[in-house]
Image (cartoon, rainbow, N blue to C red; front, side):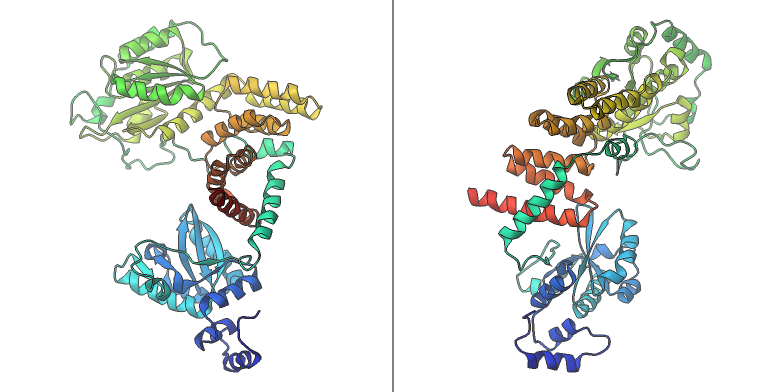
Length: 513
Protein backbone atom coordinates (compact mmCIF):
# COMPACT_ATOMS: atom_id res chain seq x y z
CA UNK A 1 0.00 0.00 0.00
CA UNK A 2 2.99 2.31 -0.32
CA UNK A 3 3.63 2.69 3.41
CA UNK A 4 7.12 1.16 3.34
CA UNK A 5 9.84 2.84 1.27
CA UNK A 6 10.99 -0.19 -0.71
CA UNK A 7 10.97 -3.97 -1.13
CA UNK A 8 14.09 -4.39 1.01
CA UNK A 9 12.36 -2.81 3.99
CA UNK A 10 9.39 -5.12 3.55
CA UNK A 11 11.71 -8.15 3.33
CA UNK A 12 13.41 -7.06 6.56
CA UNK A 13 10.08 -6.75 8.38
CA UNK A 14 8.90 -10.13 7.12
CA UNK A 15 12.17 -11.80 8.18
CA UNK A 16 11.88 -10.43 11.70
CA UNK A 17 8.13 -11.04 12.10
CA UNK A 18 7.28 -13.43 14.90
CA UNK A 19 4.17 -15.53 15.34
CA UNK A 20 2.65 -13.12 17.87
CA UNK A 21 3.65 -9.88 16.16
CA UNK A 22 1.64 -8.99 13.05
CA UNK A 23 3.41 -7.35 10.14
CA UNK A 24 2.16 -3.80 10.73
CA UNK A 25 3.26 -3.94 14.37
CA UNK A 26 6.70 -5.25 13.36
CA UNK A 27 7.09 -2.37 10.88
CA UNK A 28 6.24 0.03 13.71
CA UNK A 29 8.68 -1.60 16.14
CA UNK A 30 11.49 -1.50 13.57
CA UNK A 31 10.77 2.14 12.81
CA UNK A 32 10.01 1.52 9.14
CA UNK A 33 6.76 3.55 9.36
CA UNK A 34 4.81 5.63 11.84
CA UNK A 35 1.67 4.51 13.62
CA UNK A 36 -0.63 6.85 11.65
CA UNK A 37 0.65 5.63 8.27
CA UNK A 38 0.24 2.02 9.33
CA UNK A 39 -3.22 2.73 10.79
CA UNK A 40 -4.29 4.16 7.43
CA UNK A 41 -3.12 0.97 5.73
CA UNK A 42 -4.99 -1.18 8.27
CA UNK A 43 -8.16 0.87 7.76
CA UNK A 44 -8.02 0.37 4.00
CA UNK A 45 -7.19 -3.32 4.33
CA UNK A 46 -9.95 -4.12 6.83
CA UNK A 47 -12.61 -1.56 5.85
CA UNK A 48 -12.83 -0.50 9.49
CA UNK A 49 -11.89 2.80 11.12
CA UNK A 50 -8.44 2.64 12.70
CA UNK A 51 -7.35 4.30 15.95
CA UNK A 52 -3.96 5.98 16.30
CA UNK A 53 -3.46 5.22 19.99
CA UNK A 54 -0.28 7.28 20.43
CA UNK A 55 -2.34 10.38 19.58
CA UNK A 56 -5.26 9.59 21.93
CA UNK A 57 -6.12 10.79 25.42
CA UNK A 58 -8.09 8.04 27.18
CA UNK A 59 -10.48 8.42 30.12
CA UNK A 60 -9.39 5.70 32.55
CA UNK A 61 -12.96 5.29 33.88
CA UNK A 62 -13.80 3.46 30.65
CA UNK A 63 -12.18 0.39 32.26
CA UNK A 64 -14.66 0.46 35.13
CA UNK A 65 -16.23 -2.97 35.65
CA UNK A 66 -13.99 -4.62 33.03
CA UNK A 67 -11.38 -7.21 34.00
CA UNK A 68 -7.93 -6.11 32.71
CA UNK A 69 -6.94 -9.72 32.02
CA UNK A 70 -9.93 -10.08 29.71
CA UNK A 71 -8.87 -7.01 27.74
CA UNK A 72 -5.30 -8.34 27.52
CA UNK A 73 -6.46 -11.72 26.19
CA UNK A 74 -8.68 -10.09 23.59
CA UNK A 75 -6.12 -7.41 22.72
CA UNK A 76 -8.67 -4.65 22.85
CA UNK A 77 -9.09 -1.33 24.67
CA UNK A 78 -12.04 1.07 25.08
CA UNK A 79 -10.67 4.42 23.93
CA UNK A 80 -13.42 7.02 23.71
CA UNK A 81 -17.14 7.28 24.59
CA UNK A 82 -19.59 9.90 23.42
CA UNK A 83 -23.29 10.01 22.65
CA UNK A 84 -23.88 6.43 23.77
CA UNK A 85 -21.13 5.04 21.49
CA UNK A 86 -17.84 3.61 22.75
CA UNK A 87 -14.96 3.29 20.27
CA UNK A 88 -12.95 0.13 20.97
CA UNK A 89 -9.46 -0.43 19.53
CA UNK A 90 -8.62 -4.06 18.79
CA UNK A 91 -5.80 -5.89 17.05
CA UNK A 92 -8.32 -8.49 15.77
CA UNK A 93 -11.65 -6.62 15.67
CA UNK A 94 -13.58 -9.24 13.70
CA UNK A 95 -12.73 -11.96 16.20
CA UNK A 96 -13.58 -10.04 19.37
CA UNK A 97 -16.50 -7.88 18.16
CA UNK A 98 -19.21 -10.10 19.70
CA UNK A 99 -17.41 -10.16 23.06
CA UNK A 100 -16.98 -6.38 22.99
CA UNK A 101 -20.68 -5.77 22.27
CA UNK A 102 -21.72 -8.07 25.13
CA UNK A 103 -19.19 -6.50 27.50
CA UNK A 104 -20.08 -2.85 26.97
CA UNK A 105 -23.83 -3.29 26.40
CA UNK A 106 -24.12 -3.60 30.18
CA UNK A 107 -23.25 0.09 30.41
CA UNK A 108 -25.80 1.03 27.77
CA UNK A 109 -23.20 1.67 25.06
CA UNK A 110 -23.25 0.86 21.36
CA UNK A 111 -19.83 -0.44 20.32
CA UNK A 112 -17.88 0.90 17.33
CA UNK A 113 -15.15 -1.66 16.64
CA UNK A 114 -11.94 -0.14 15.28
CA UNK A 115 -8.65 -1.71 14.23
CA UNK A 116 -5.31 -0.74 15.77
CA UNK A 117 -1.72 -1.98 15.80
CA UNK A 118 -1.38 -4.93 18.15
CA UNK A 119 1.79 -3.50 19.69
CA UNK A 120 0.21 -0.12 20.49
CA UNK A 121 -2.94 -1.79 21.84
CA UNK A 122 -0.81 -3.79 24.30
CA UNK A 123 1.34 -0.80 25.28
CA UNK A 124 -1.60 1.59 25.66
CA UNK A 125 -3.58 -0.96 27.67
CA UNK A 126 -0.70 -1.34 30.12
CA UNK A 127 -0.49 2.44 30.41
CA UNK A 128 -4.23 2.91 31.02
CA UNK A 129 -4.33 0.16 33.66
CA UNK A 130 -1.34 1.67 35.47
CA UNK A 131 -2.83 5.18 35.29
CA UNK A 132 -6.12 3.94 36.72
CA UNK A 133 -4.35 2.15 39.60
CA UNK A 134 -2.60 5.46 40.44
CA UNK A 135 -5.92 7.26 40.45
CA UNK A 136 -5.15 9.26 37.29
CA UNK A 137 -8.22 10.37 35.35
CA UNK A 138 -6.46 10.32 31.97
CA UNK A 139 -3.84 8.33 30.08
CA UNK A 140 -2.10 10.45 27.47
CA UNK A 141 -0.49 8.86 24.42
CA UNK A 142 3.10 9.89 23.70
CA UNK A 143 2.20 11.89 20.59
CA UNK A 144 -0.70 13.60 22.39
CA UNK A 145 1.64 14.49 25.27
CA UNK A 146 3.95 16.30 22.87
CA UNK A 147 1.12 18.68 22.00
CA UNK A 148 1.04 20.09 25.54
CA UNK A 149 -1.30 19.52 28.54
CA UNK A 150 -4.32 17.37 27.68
CA UNK A 151 -7.30 17.87 29.96
CA UNK A 152 -10.00 16.17 27.91
CA UNK A 153 -10.35 12.73 26.28
CA UNK A 154 -9.41 12.70 22.62
CA UNK A 155 -9.92 10.19 19.83
CA UNK A 156 -7.52 9.98 16.88
CA UNK A 157 -9.48 8.12 14.23
CA UNK A 158 -8.51 7.21 10.67
CA UNK A 159 -11.37 6.34 8.31
CA UNK A 160 -10.96 3.78 5.51
CA UNK A 161 -12.11 6.58 3.20
CA UNK A 162 -9.78 9.31 4.49
CA UNK A 163 -7.29 8.71 1.68
CA UNK A 164 -10.00 9.19 -0.96
CA UNK A 165 -11.20 12.50 -2.39
CA UNK A 166 -13.57 14.23 0.07
CA UNK A 167 -15.81 15.52 -2.72
CA UNK A 168 -16.32 12.01 -4.10
CA UNK A 169 -16.98 10.63 -0.64
CA UNK A 170 -19.42 13.41 0.19
CA UNK A 171 -21.43 12.92 -3.00
CA UNK A 172 -21.51 9.15 -2.52
CA UNK A 173 -22.65 9.50 1.10
CA UNK A 174 -25.25 12.15 0.21
CA UNK A 175 -26.79 9.85 -2.39
CA UNK A 176 -27.01 6.95 0.08
CA UNK A 177 -28.53 9.09 2.85
CA UNK A 178 -31.10 10.74 0.60
CA UNK A 179 -32.12 7.39 -0.88
CA UNK A 180 -32.75 6.11 2.64
CA UNK A 181 -34.90 9.03 3.81
CA UNK A 182 -36.96 9.30 0.63
CA UNK A 183 -37.75 5.65 0.11
CA UNK A 184 -41.37 4.54 0.33
CA UNK A 185 -42.32 3.59 3.87
CA UNK A 186 -44.00 0.20 4.03
CA UNK A 187 -47.23 -0.05 5.99
CA UNK A 188 -45.73 -2.64 8.32
CA UNK A 189 -43.08 -0.03 9.20
CA UNK A 190 -45.87 2.18 10.54
CA UNK A 191 -47.48 -0.68 12.39
CA UNK A 192 -44.44 -2.39 13.85
CA UNK A 193 -41.71 0.19 14.30
CA UNK A 194 -43.79 3.10 15.55
CA UNK A 195 -45.92 1.45 18.18
CA UNK A 196 -46.00 3.86 21.07
CA UNK A 197 -45.10 1.21 23.60
CA UNK A 198 -42.46 -0.43 21.45
CA UNK A 199 -40.45 2.55 20.25
CA UNK A 200 -36.76 1.80 20.88
CA UNK A 201 -35.18 3.28 23.96
CA UNK A 202 -38.49 4.26 25.58
CA UNK A 203 -38.04 4.62 29.34
CA UNK A 204 -40.87 4.01 31.80
CA UNK A 205 -41.08 6.55 34.57
CA UNK A 206 -44.14 5.28 36.38
CA UNK A 207 -44.16 4.64 40.09
CA UNK A 208 -42.74 1.17 40.92
CA UNK A 209 -45.09 -1.47 42.17
CA UNK A 210 -44.55 -4.13 44.79
CA UNK A 211 -43.98 -6.74 42.12
CA UNK A 212 -40.91 -4.91 40.83
CA UNK A 213 -39.30 -3.48 43.94
CA UNK A 214 -38.34 -5.04 47.24
CA UNK A 215 -40.54 -4.45 50.25
CA UNK A 216 -37.63 -2.96 52.17
CA UNK A 217 -36.64 -0.51 49.41
CA UNK A 218 -37.33 3.13 50.35
CA UNK A 219 -39.23 5.29 47.90
CA UNK A 220 -36.56 7.80 46.88
CA UNK A 221 -38.58 10.97 47.36
CA UNK A 222 -39.66 13.45 49.96
CA UNK A 223 -41.14 13.16 53.34
CA UNK A 224 -44.82 14.05 53.56
CA UNK A 225 -47.36 15.10 56.06
CA UNK A 226 -48.58 18.40 57.41
CA UNK A 227 -45.73 18.61 59.90
CA UNK A 228 -42.02 17.82 59.49
CA UNK A 229 -40.83 14.52 60.90
CA UNK A 230 -44.23 12.92 60.69
CA UNK A 231 -44.26 9.16 60.18
CA UNK A 232 -45.41 8.47 56.60
CA UNK A 233 -46.85 5.09 57.56
CA UNK A 234 -48.96 6.69 60.26
CA UNK A 235 -49.96 9.47 57.87
CA UNK A 236 -51.11 6.81 55.40
CA UNK A 237 -53.59 5.33 57.87
CA UNK A 238 -56.50 7.61 56.99
CA UNK A 239 -59.95 6.59 58.02
CA UNK A 240 -61.88 5.01 55.17
CA UNK A 241 -65.01 6.94 56.05
CA UNK A 242 -63.28 10.28 55.35
CA UNK A 243 -62.10 9.10 51.90
CA UNK A 244 -65.51 7.56 51.30
CA UNK A 245 -67.20 10.92 51.90
CA UNK A 246 -64.92 12.60 49.36
CA UNK A 247 -65.49 9.83 46.81
CA UNK A 248 -69.27 10.09 47.20
CA UNK A 249 -69.07 13.83 46.53
CA UNK A 250 -67.06 13.22 43.35
CA UNK A 251 -69.48 10.50 42.21
CA UNK A 252 -72.26 13.10 41.94
CA UNK A 253 -70.57 14.78 38.96
CA UNK A 254 -71.73 14.47 35.35
CA UNK A 255 -70.80 11.43 33.24
CA UNK A 256 -67.29 11.42 31.82
CA UNK A 257 -67.14 12.56 28.18
CA UNK A 258 -64.73 10.76 25.87
CA UNK A 259 -62.92 12.34 22.93
CA UNK A 260 -61.39 15.75 22.51
CA UNK A 261 -57.86 16.77 23.46
CA UNK A 262 -56.31 15.18 26.57
CA UNK A 263 -57.16 17.11 29.73
CA UNK A 264 -54.93 17.69 32.75
CA UNK A 265 -55.65 19.14 36.17
CA UNK A 266 -52.68 20.71 37.99
CA UNK A 267 -53.12 21.15 41.73
CA UNK A 268 -50.53 23.18 43.63
CA UNK A 269 -50.71 26.10 46.05
CA UNK A 270 -47.56 27.55 44.48
CA UNK A 271 -48.46 29.88 41.61
CA UNK A 272 -44.99 29.60 40.01
CA UNK A 273 -45.30 25.81 39.73
CA UNK A 274 -48.77 26.03 38.20
CA UNK A 275 -47.61 28.69 35.75
CA UNK A 276 -44.53 26.65 34.75
CA UNK A 277 -46.53 23.50 34.06
CA UNK A 278 -49.23 25.29 32.08
CA UNK A 279 -46.55 26.99 29.99
CA UNK A 280 -44.80 23.66 29.31
CA UNK A 281 -47.85 21.46 28.75
CA UNK A 282 -50.50 23.53 26.94
CA UNK A 283 -48.44 24.09 23.73
CA UNK A 284 -48.25 20.31 23.33
CA UNK A 285 -51.97 20.04 22.66
CA UNK A 286 -53.32 19.43 26.17
CA UNK A 287 -56.22 21.25 27.80
CA UNK A 288 -55.01 22.29 31.25
CA UNK A 289 -57.03 23.31 34.31
CA UNK A 290 -55.48 24.43 37.60
CA UNK A 291 -56.44 24.48 41.26
CA UNK A 292 -54.68 26.10 44.22
CA UNK A 293 -55.85 23.61 46.86
CA UNK A 294 -57.21 20.12 47.27
CA UNK A 295 -60.64 21.59 48.01
CA UNK A 296 -60.61 23.58 44.75
CA UNK A 297 -59.50 20.45 42.91
CA UNK A 298 -62.53 18.54 44.23
CA UNK A 299 -64.82 21.30 42.88
CA UNK A 300 -63.15 21.04 39.46
CA UNK A 301 -63.40 17.24 39.44
CA UNK A 302 -67.13 17.44 40.19
CA UNK A 303 -67.63 19.40 36.96
CA UNK A 304 -65.45 17.41 34.56
CA UNK A 305 -63.01 14.50 34.61
CA UNK A 306 -59.44 15.04 33.33
CA UNK A 307 -57.23 12.30 31.94
CA UNK A 308 -54.48 13.00 34.47
CA UNK A 309 -54.24 14.91 37.77
CA UNK A 310 -50.85 16.30 38.83
CA UNK A 311 -51.07 17.19 42.52
CA UNK A 312 -48.66 18.42 45.15
CA UNK A 313 -48.61 16.30 48.30
CA UNK A 314 -48.68 19.23 50.75
CA UNK A 315 -51.90 21.00 49.78
CA UNK A 316 -54.10 23.23 51.93
CA UNK A 317 -57.46 21.69 52.77
CA UNK A 318 -57.46 18.18 51.30
CA UNK A 319 -53.85 17.09 50.83
CA UNK A 320 -52.51 15.30 47.77
CA UNK A 321 -52.64 11.83 49.30
CA UNK A 322 -56.31 12.15 50.30
CA UNK A 323 -57.17 13.66 46.93
CA UNK A 324 -55.43 10.79 45.12
CA UNK A 325 -57.16 8.11 47.15
CA UNK A 326 -60.57 9.76 46.70
CA UNK A 327 -60.10 9.82 42.93
CA UNK A 328 -59.13 6.15 42.92
CA UNK A 329 -62.24 5.29 45.01
CA UNK A 330 -64.60 7.09 42.59
CA UNK A 331 -66.21 4.90 39.96
CA UNK A 332 -66.95 7.89 37.72
CA UNK A 333 -63.20 8.70 37.58
CA UNK A 334 -62.01 5.17 36.79
CA UNK A 335 -58.80 5.34 34.79
CA UNK A 336 -57.87 8.91 35.75
CA UNK A 337 -54.12 8.93 36.35
CA UNK A 338 -52.67 10.68 39.38
CA UNK A 339 -49.10 11.96 39.64
CA UNK A 340 -47.99 13.22 43.04
CA UNK A 341 -45.20 15.76 43.43
CA UNK A 342 -43.35 17.40 46.30
CA UNK A 343 -40.09 19.08 47.23
CA UNK A 344 -37.48 17.39 49.44
CA UNK A 345 -38.17 19.38 52.59
CA UNK A 346 -39.37 16.93 55.22
CA UNK A 347 -37.40 14.46 57.27
CA UNK A 348 -39.68 11.49 56.60
CA UNK A 349 -39.37 9.12 53.67
CA UNK A 350 -42.23 7.74 51.59
CA UNK A 351 -41.99 4.09 50.67
CA UNK A 352 -43.53 2.64 47.53
CA UNK A 353 -46.04 0.85 49.77
CA UNK A 354 -47.42 4.23 50.88
CA UNK A 355 -47.82 5.45 47.30
CA UNK A 356 -49.42 2.16 46.36
CA UNK A 357 -51.80 2.44 49.30
CA UNK A 358 -53.08 5.72 47.90
CA UNK A 359 -53.04 4.42 44.32
CA UNK A 360 -50.61 6.99 42.89
CA UNK A 361 -49.55 6.26 39.31
CA UNK A 362 -46.37 8.31 39.34
CA UNK A 363 -44.17 10.70 41.27
CA UNK A 364 -42.28 13.87 40.33
CA UNK A 365 -39.73 15.56 42.58
CA UNK A 366 -39.27 19.32 42.75
CA UNK A 367 -37.53 21.11 41.16
CA UNK A 368 -39.46 19.46 38.34
CA UNK A 369 -37.85 17.70 35.39
CA UNK A 370 -40.63 18.68 32.97
CA UNK A 371 -39.42 16.39 30.18
CA UNK A 372 -39.63 13.40 32.51
CA UNK A 373 -43.00 14.53 33.85
CA UNK A 374 -44.37 14.81 30.32
CA UNK A 375 -43.31 11.22 29.62
CA UNK A 376 -45.34 10.04 32.61
CA UNK A 377 -48.29 12.14 31.46
CA UNK A 378 -48.15 10.69 27.94
CA UNK A 379 -48.01 7.16 29.31
CA UNK A 380 -51.02 7.71 31.57
CA UNK A 381 -53.04 9.49 28.87
CA UNK A 382 -52.32 6.60 26.53
CA UNK A 383 -53.53 4.10 29.11
CA UNK A 384 -56.74 6.03 29.79
CA UNK A 385 -57.55 6.64 26.14
CA UNK A 386 -56.98 2.96 25.41
CA UNK A 387 -59.86 2.18 27.77
CA UNK A 388 -62.33 4.54 26.10
CA UNK A 389 -61.47 4.27 22.41
CA UNK A 390 -59.22 2.42 20.02
CA UNK A 391 -56.58 4.49 18.26
CA UNK A 392 -55.62 1.41 16.30
CA UNK A 393 -59.05 1.22 14.65
CA UNK A 394 -58.76 4.80 13.38
CA UNK A 395 -55.14 4.23 12.35
CA UNK A 396 -55.99 1.04 10.45
CA UNK A 397 -58.81 2.83 8.66
CA UNK A 398 -56.46 5.64 7.59
CA UNK A 399 -53.86 3.17 6.29
CA UNK A 400 -56.55 1.24 4.41
CA UNK A 401 -57.60 4.47 2.72
CA UNK A 402 -53.95 5.18 1.84
CA UNK A 403 -53.56 1.70 0.33
CA UNK A 404 -56.70 2.29 -1.72
CA UNK A 405 -55.04 5.33 -3.28
CA UNK A 406 -56.88 8.04 -1.32
CA UNK A 407 -53.84 9.78 0.16
CA UNK A 408 -55.69 13.01 0.98
CA UNK A 409 -58.38 11.07 2.82
CA UNK A 410 -55.76 9.13 4.79
CA UNK A 411 -54.04 12.38 5.77
CA UNK A 412 -57.30 13.86 7.06
CA UNK A 413 -58.08 10.73 9.09
CA UNK A 414 -54.62 10.80 10.63
CA UNK A 415 -55.07 14.49 11.45
CA UNK A 416 -58.29 13.60 13.25
CA UNK A 417 -56.34 11.02 15.25
CA UNK A 418 -53.74 13.60 16.25
CA UNK A 419 -56.49 16.02 17.32
CA UNK A 420 -57.90 13.35 19.61
CA UNK A 421 -54.50 12.42 21.06
CA UNK A 422 -51.59 14.84 20.46
CA UNK A 423 -49.21 12.36 22.12
CA UNK A 424 -49.90 9.58 19.58
CA UNK A 425 -46.41 9.39 18.07
CA UNK A 426 -47.31 6.47 15.78
CA UNK A 427 -50.10 8.46 14.14
CA UNK A 428 -47.95 11.59 13.89
CA UNK A 429 -45.10 9.66 12.24
CA UNK A 430 -47.42 8.12 9.65
CA UNK A 431 -48.95 11.53 8.98
CA UNK A 432 -45.51 13.10 8.54
CA UNK A 433 -44.50 10.41 6.05
CA UNK A 434 -47.61 10.94 3.93
CA UNK A 435 -47.13 14.70 4.00
CA UNK A 436 -43.51 14.24 2.89
CA UNK A 437 -44.69 11.93 0.11
CA UNK A 438 -47.06 14.65 -1.09
CA UNK A 439 -44.25 17.29 -0.96
CA UNK A 440 -46.05 19.23 1.79
CA UNK A 441 -42.70 19.90 3.37
CA UNK A 442 -43.53 22.51 6.01
CA UNK A 443 -46.40 20.43 7.35
CA UNK A 444 -44.23 17.31 7.37
CA UNK A 445 -41.52 19.15 9.30
CA UNK A 446 -44.07 20.18 11.96
CA UNK A 447 -45.19 16.58 12.44
CA UNK A 448 -41.67 15.13 12.49
CA UNK A 449 -40.69 17.75 15.08
CA UNK A 450 -43.62 16.63 17.24
CA UNK A 451 -42.56 12.98 16.93
CA UNK A 452 -38.99 13.84 17.90
CA UNK A 453 -40.24 15.81 20.89
CA UNK A 454 -42.33 12.83 21.98
CA UNK A 455 -39.65 10.22 21.16
CA UNK A 456 -36.20 11.94 21.15
CA UNK A 457 -34.34 8.74 20.29
CA UNK A 458 -36.46 7.51 17.38
CA UNK A 459 -34.01 7.35 14.48
CA UNK A 460 -36.42 7.27 11.47
CA UNK A 461 -38.08 10.51 12.59
CA UNK A 462 -34.77 12.21 13.38
CA UNK A 463 -33.12 11.41 10.06
CA UNK A 464 -36.19 12.34 7.99
CA UNK A 465 -36.52 15.62 9.86
CA UNK A 466 -32.84 16.34 9.21
CA UNK A 467 -33.34 15.67 5.49
CA UNK A 468 -36.28 18.06 5.26
CA UNK A 469 -34.28 20.76 7.07
CA UNK A 470 -31.53 20.18 4.49
CA UNK A 471 -34.00 20.35 1.61
CA UNK A 472 -35.36 23.68 2.91
CA UNK A 473 -31.84 25.11 3.15
CA UNK A 474 -31.58 24.98 6.95
CA UNK A 475 -28.12 23.40 6.82
CA UNK A 476 -27.04 23.97 10.41
CA UNK A 477 -30.30 22.57 11.78
CA UNK A 478 -29.93 19.57 9.45
CA UNK A 479 -26.36 18.92 10.66
CA UNK A 480 -27.40 19.21 14.31
CA UNK A 481 -30.35 16.84 13.84
CA UNK A 482 -28.33 14.24 11.95
CA UNK A 483 -25.74 14.33 14.73
CA UNK A 484 -28.52 13.69 17.24
CA UNK A 485 -29.64 10.74 15.12
CA UNK A 486 -26.23 9.05 14.82
CA UNK A 487 -26.16 7.27 18.23
CA UNK A 488 -29.52 5.69 17.43
CA UNK A 489 -28.64 4.37 13.96
CA UNK A 490 -28.22 0.57 14.05
CA UNK A 491 -27.03 0.26 10.43
CA UNK A 492 -23.24 0.73 10.47
CA UNK A 493 -23.05 1.53 6.75
CA UNK A 494 -25.81 4.12 6.96
CA UNK A 495 -24.23 5.62 10.06
CA UNK A 496 -20.94 5.98 8.21
CA UNK A 497 -22.67 7.66 5.25
CA UNK A 498 -24.42 10.09 7.56
CA UNK A 499 -21.10 10.94 9.22
CA UNK A 500 -19.50 11.66 5.84
CA UNK A 501 -22.47 13.65 4.57
CA UNK A 502 -22.66 15.72 7.76
CA UNK A 503 -18.94 16.43 7.54
CA UNK A 504 -19.37 17.61 3.94
CA UNK A 505 -22.33 19.82 4.88
CA UNK A 506 -20.42 21.36 7.79
CA UNK A 507 -17.39 22.05 5.60
CA UNK A 508 -19.55 23.57 2.84
CA UNK A 509 -21.31 25.75 5.39
CA UNK A 510 -18.02 27.06 6.78
CA UNK A 511 -16.67 27.69 3.28
CA UNK A 512 -19.80 29.67 2.40
CA UNK A 513 -19.13 32.03 5.28
